[in-house]
Length: 169
Image 1 (tube, rainbow, N blue to C red):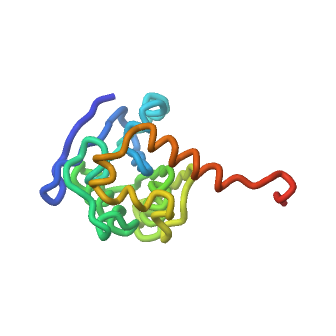
Image 2 (image 1 turned 90 degrees about the horizontal axis):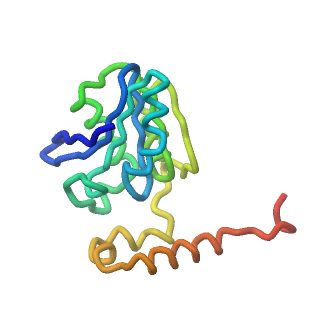
């Protein structure tokens, strides 16, 4: 596995690459491509070529996200332009996690080249961000937040999402 970079619309996009064969685009969620590292070797070992993209403003990619650039359709356009930049023009499998699942759904809905879709812990393609993470769109918040604050926000978000066993149906 190697980390590479390609320029798309003047922005350097970082991505992980592994294997050869039919292409698989791995689309990250709130964080970045590093979440795909544990499965890259297995995907490559199964005879596929895996690409795990860092969206603009995420991970090791350049750029900064605005409210418009962070929309699911805009991120899907970035993913499509990325595929073009690395020379993928035919059929592709797209796997998405979290908000990346929404981007993957959008690609599958509007890109005929997407032949297979894999979703993990995915949000709907037309609903993001959820209120619990919306404040992380502000770069000053991201620059100032501590790891403890991120963990506390995550714990609070998880606690609010829990349903007591008696309430489940």
